[in-house]
Length: 372
Image (tube, rainbow, N blue to C red; front, side, top):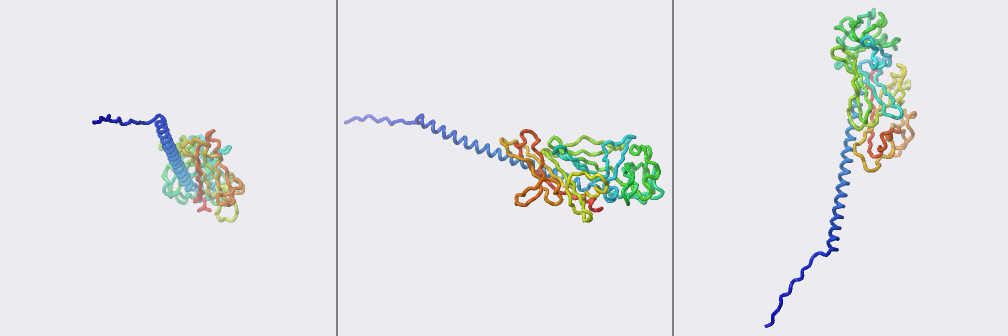
């Protein structure tokens, strides 16, 4: 009988080379997954921050548009007084920050392509505001006889003008109603707003009191890469004027540019034929301002790893009434237009690492149009 020695099954495993290849494949797979995740997260951050810029820019523009719409309310219905010089005293001293002219909107051009600021003035009466015609024999030091005192109340600020059928020949004056109006509007000589009243008969029959209530006087500007607002308030007890520090409204707003829309052609058609940033200097020129054009530039908050913006923002302002501004440009559709370059390259050495969005609109000044 033959004896057989059982064979030992040969044991086998991974060689060093096989292990190294396996590790290499695993590393490559991990690298690919990591690359996909990093790109996906970067795109997500860019999309999210882009959405923030979209929201901030759109809401900032809507806020400006809504604020501009009532500009001139209460006094634009009397076009002859638009543009008159204002004098305002409180406690015997000139109110330094009060608007120097009775105008619906003032655009202050930013020096060196810096952001502009937009100041809006309107009556703050929430019910209605109509001019009160001064009647004979004209004002005394303490009272202004009027044809009607509808809509006016004690404590309201009024602007006295010596004419409503023609341009005022003397500065318009800010006064305060100090009692219940009736056949005349009481203006007390001891009231803080009325210190140093004008001489009698300065505002005769044919003049008017413009009812401003608590005036709406707000200024929008860009500061610290944010849209800010600064407004006039009156102390509830003393009616002392107070201009608080600017309040931030929307972050990542880096530019604000504005243009006056003027009907400069003597055809009385109330259509804008000139756009520019030149402030009017006479009442007649102020009466030509019937619209405002606004451009807002928003920046996303995402800092990119490489340059994503390579030039200043181009603002297409069209060809109607814009021959004196901007430069000739070609739109994406191939049409010839006029474009204004909005400066963003002064926002720091890393300005190219952010994305920007331009928002613009035209706001008709309806109170100016209705009175034209």
